[in-house]
Amino acid sequence: MLMVAKIPTVGTYYNVNLQSMRAPSMEKTWSYKDYCGGSNCYTDSGTSGIWLVMPKLDCEFFRNASREELDGPLQIDLESTDGGTITLSFPLQWIVEQAAQGRVSFVDPTGDGGHFALGFPTYQFYYLVYGMGEDTVTFVDLPQKNESGRELAEVDGGNFPAWVCGRDTPSANAARDHSLTFVSVASSLLLIAFISV
Image (cartoon, rainbow, N blue to C red; front, side, top):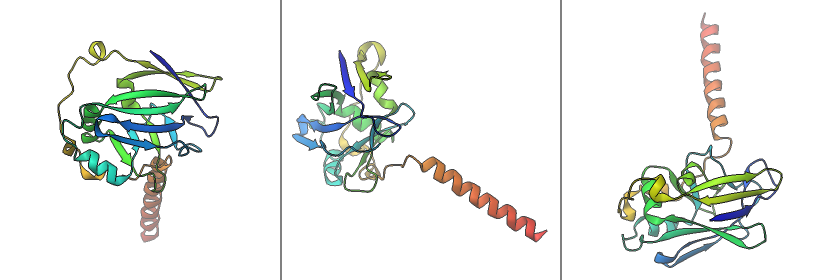
């Protein structure tokens, strides 16, 4: 199945317009129709995880959900090229499994820099094809039985740590900031050593 999402021509990322997220088995819906702006919602194979926008209280409910409540999909609605929506679907059990391994994080939309990112784990379920010059990204269903070769573990929500809820999204400049800090500290130590001599 081919699903084509619109890429807003804003910023330097392959942006998407997040419309909503839904977890029918938990009777939960989160609307984000006016949330995305600039480069805070995007796809990026170079991002090691998936960042989901979710209020911290709802994330805590999600974290403590029963196995029965997790028996269903997390559906993510993105704006399509015709102004409608396309829907990506990920098993809730898989989301919990990935969260336990630090590959899925939840960011509070009321916090500073609450990014939504479909990073590398997305490729376990979809091929992504970027339409260069067309401002589109096409999601192609990946056959799970043939590609993954394993069953998802049956886990309860509590299997991922509390810090996953309300986690601050690493900024796009986080790596650079850490590098600059390291360089600054190293330079200071060298200067002190030079003065001492």
